[in-house]
Image (cartoon, rainbow, N blue to C red; front, side):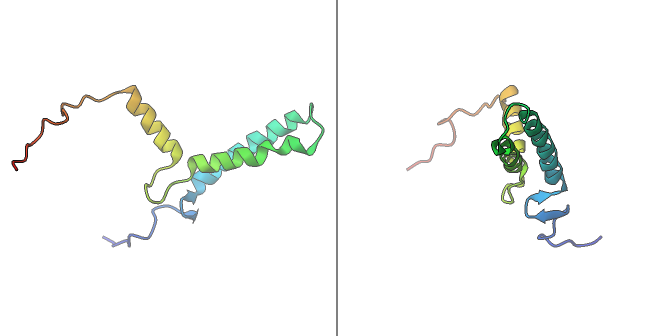
Length: 103
């Protein structure tokens, strides 16, 4: 058994919260946005047709970047919230029905 220090991550990261998985998502978003910009080139003949490329890449980066404090990305949080609202839990706790402190 090897002792691994806490500050050593379990996966390779280029910088904190951004590794190969996030890079793959950003590359896919870049390819899609470049294709979209080339399609816009049919209708728009100016430099502004390439405006969606950095916007979509940055939006994807913000969506998949892992927050180092929480260890989850915004996309993971949105999936968790969606699954929570899809299957509501029943809690038997009623506010104010707990232990009464005697004064």
